[in-house]
Image 1 (cartoon, helix red, strand yellow):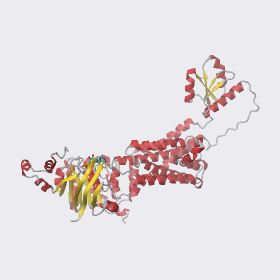
Image 2 (cartoon, chains in turn yellow, green):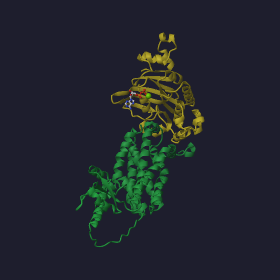
Image 3 (cartoon, chains in turn red, yellow):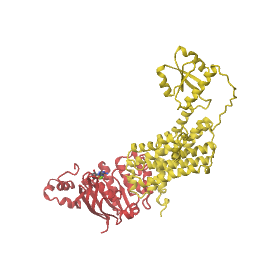
Image 4 (tube, helix red, strand yellow):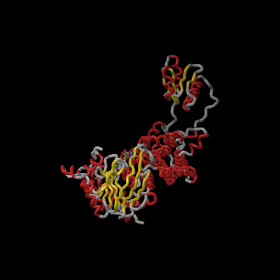
Length: 248
Length: 350
Ligand SMILES: Nc1ncnc2c1ncn2[C@@H]1O[C@H](COP(=O)(O)OP(=O)(O)O)[C@@H](O)[C@H]1O
Ligand SMILES: [Mg+2]
């Protein structure tokens, strides 16, 4: 099967801190792959290396069968990126912001299509500063989708959002998947990984400690715990590390 | 190759410029300061350097009965303003410039002044002349005084092109430097770096967009000078416009360099002060840079603000043609291309 992402033995350190420590995984075309792990696990560092924003200290990265060193321009045209903490310009409108990003891409959807895709038609003339957290996040997705990407990177797309906004955002992603897109996302919400992802890698201390479909991971827990309540990825993380996902 | 029409947007450089302009005009304070600065400075100068007769010299006399006659004699001259000082006050008054010279004693008098101050040397001569005449000096002749004021040669005329240049420098440095740091703090630069945007476009857009406001920015103090002081505008509008544009592009590029790596506003403003404040002094905004020794002149002449001010004074006051100021234009071109290239090279996108 053709791969969207292949990374092998990725290494990245900041001074004494080892952020990514021999991390390997593969994302297939058309799937939604999740990196699940607590804060500080190295998810952002990993995804930024894959996005060509950070240079790894070691390891091997291939994205859409291309390499950052030789094919940066082509890759940038074909990838959609949503970063963990981008703040768009306060006093530009939603439409102006999307238009700016759309102008960078050779191909892609129209501004109206993008507004419709993320359900922001009603906000097209609003300044970014006036948007709610969920609306800002959907604007960010619209900018990521501006070039009709083959592969979409999302770093904690729903952190800090209320349940309704999360669901709205999940709908946007589902539509993107249905149109054949590949998604790589990071999250520390197990329900998000369970709902959206075909396969999940559980990341802790900079490497993958388990990888499978959410179902298989939960099944691997074995009987005892599942009796009390239906198993979750939280339980998987607990049984692997002895810690809770969110407090870690 | 797809066209702008295909995308439904303008080309990226234009979209980036539009974004910059929209952001700017939606920030009314920025516009306000941009135009207020040159006007306030010009008005302050108009008050400090009235276009009427020369200023009177301020002479300090130590208070006391035995100085009455001296005081009367001095006060009789229209060129002199007398201030009474207590003995304790005299040094402070001299230091602050409240008085230019202090006269003590009677016959012969003692003049106390700082010879490194031009206005004090002048005051000493005026006082000496008045006192000697009062003491009965006979004049070999009474020269006719032909008092004229040539617009264009007064201090205020000389000053306004300098203030215009200073405005171009400040607006370019601060608006572009700060915008860049702000976008970095908001992680917007990182997001843009993740897109296929050409990095050169991003750096060029605000520098070019700044030209949209350059017209009024230069015209306001120019018209003010012409209206309030009858300052002559001898050069053509085209020459003045071209010098202004070259200057604005240059300071935009320098501002971009200043903002190219800074991670905080403090770091950026420290850097911008570090390079701009010495130029306020060296480049001859308020007093001629020919006051500095010959050995440092080549350095001063190579400074970007010196080149801009010299070119601006040339076209406004002397009606210089662009050809005759090619040297200044070349210096400014170098100060545009090199900082831009360095900024592009070292720019920090995260
Ligand atoms: N720029 C940086 N400088 C120093 N340490 C960093 C930097 N970025 C991340 N780290 C450290 O690397 C580790 C992994 O961080 P990160 O990749 O952001 O984790 P996650 O996204 O999973 O929360 C953390 O210990 C973090 O403190
Ligand atoms: Mg993170």
